[in-house]
Amino acid sequence: MSSPPGQAPDVLATENQHLRDRIRQLETELSSARAGMAEIESALRTAQSTLARRTAEFETLFRSIPVGVGLSWDPSCRDIRINPAFATMLGIDDAENASKSRQDGDALPFRVLKEGQEVAAEDLPMQVAARTGSDVRGFFYELVRHDGVMLTEYGHATPLFDENGTVSGSIGVFLDFTELRHAQRELERANEELRRSNADLNHFAYGSTHDLREPLRAIRIYSQLLARNAQIQADTELLECVNTIGDSATRMDRLLRDLMDYIQVATRQNKCIEEVDLNHVVSGVLSTLEYSITEANAQISCPQLPTISGYPTHFTHLFQNLIGNALKYRNPNRATQVRIAVTESEREWTFSVADNGIGIEPAYTGRIFDLFQRLHGREIPGSGVGLAICQRVVQRYGGRIWVESTAGTGSTFYFTIPA
Ligand code: ADP
Image (cartoon, rainbow, N blue to C red):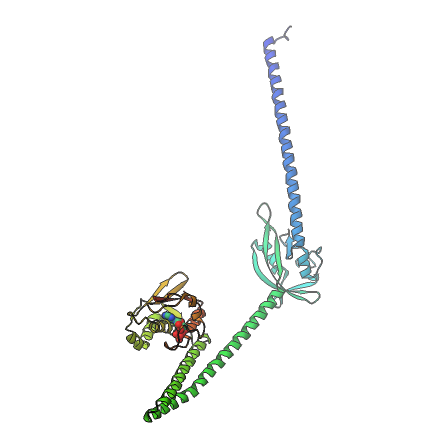
């Protein structure tokens, strides 16, 4: 075979070979590009079907959720799409553009009020969220529908952003709060009534208890006179009877005084809350109990105590009852020891009054804080009111009171006062 003029035959063959190689390479690239296209098409189909599913899900949720929803893809919120729940609240059709900012917004058959004043369209929550790009949370409005029904609506509005981060509308969620608002007002009214009737009751109970003490005074005085006569006449039988009457009257008087304290703890005080130095309170209590402390030959230890906001009488009741009981329910076979302690945590103070007295059976440790609950007979005097007073005081401050005890070994009473 002869070569074209001017070209060497092997140069041509090499060029041909290059061309064939290039065509093969192009064919390979084309087939891998086709495979890539098919992959992209399949991914696109998956994305389209996911989008269709999500849209259907959103649409179902939007239409069926029993919460009012408004949606606007317009930064001025001139066009607001609403779901059926919101349409029912507004008293319009859900196909209607519910925006008060639309050109004929005034023609919409509902009014939006805040504390009785009509709210301007641009101040409505969805409009504000779209204008400012910030959430409008926890708003309350009154809605007056065309049929005259008035509703309380509560909700949140949130701005919507496009892919460039620009505000392009807003979404609002609205709840019909009418029933709840009514119920809340009713509850407040009932609470106020209860407070008033409780105060009346306390007042009545305090007055009656006070009046009941008056005839007891006469009984005690006359029984003392009679006892003196019986002594003169050496009438031991009469003396015993008269002393029993006198003792009963004294016990009854003690009970009534404790009851008056109990009632007073629950009564609202006209005095202002003050800073109470508990070191003063405890030293006052210890001097009141001086006789019992000496009689019991008791050792009492008390650390530095804090100053707390409250009523001084409340803390006097608390410490006097707890320390008084520690002395009263002592074990006569050993030296009485009473230890007061306090710990502080972030939320509360925890106080304790520990004794080495006769202790309490575990079965009774819950009951003793109830009114008139006593575990002992007349051999140890008492009215069963002291711990009920302590419980009432502690509860008034939002604290707790409890006892840990081992019968025969001693008891520790704890109470907390929120910091
Ligand atoms: P009172 O002492 O007037 O009976 P309280 O309400 O103070 O009434 O106490 C109720 C009961 O709890 C007491 O009757 C007693 O049985 C028991 N109690 C209270 N404190 C102690 C204590 N420190 N040790 C043992 N028992 C106690």
